[in-house]
Image (cartoon, rainbow, N blue to C red; front, side, top):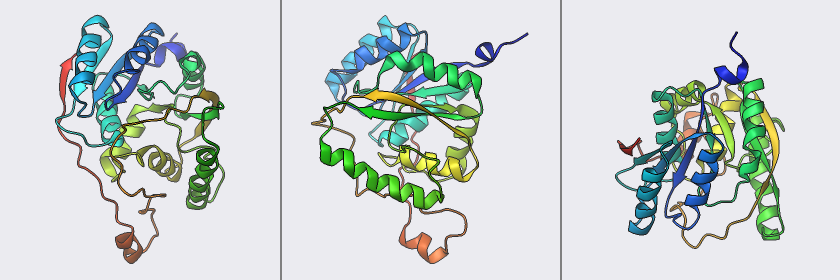
Length: 254
């Protein structure tokens, strides 16, 4: 008889944009935890590209996918999720490449996904003292907008990118709806999945605040998705979603 753990075929998806200093430890932590790892290089510079090339050689369970140009975090995650589904995985653990997520919690995420394979397993961050207080409290502005858009408190934190997606459901969403391609991705996909009736499970996890000197280019942020069924065409036009089409990606090492 197949157990839930055997039925689950998880991998990790890591979007990267010039995270040369931290990405090695992240990839080592993921592969040491037994996960195949799909790393999506979103147009990083030469220094980070060299680090990723070396990791792809030294880590047999790592697959490196290169985008032809920078498209944003959401575009990179989307490419990684599509690659994961095409490779036969059932679930993907999304992890940031900057080292902010606590990889010792991976077994807890996987166990929750095995027990609830149709649910999205979401990290609820417990920040340490490194987060600036103003940033901590400003997060609640986004929380309020999300709660208004969902008419519920079901989404406890929409901004933490440490989560496990059921791949079939997630890729179907990405293929049928225009989802933000940059830093708005993490927020928007949870709201859209909630609108579609997806179950969300929450795991409290420690998160370190990383001060980024260079991060994904981020246009004026959109605080909430704008195409929920029932919104008028006029409102939809005013709040139009602008996304970067998913560009063709090349697998460098698999």
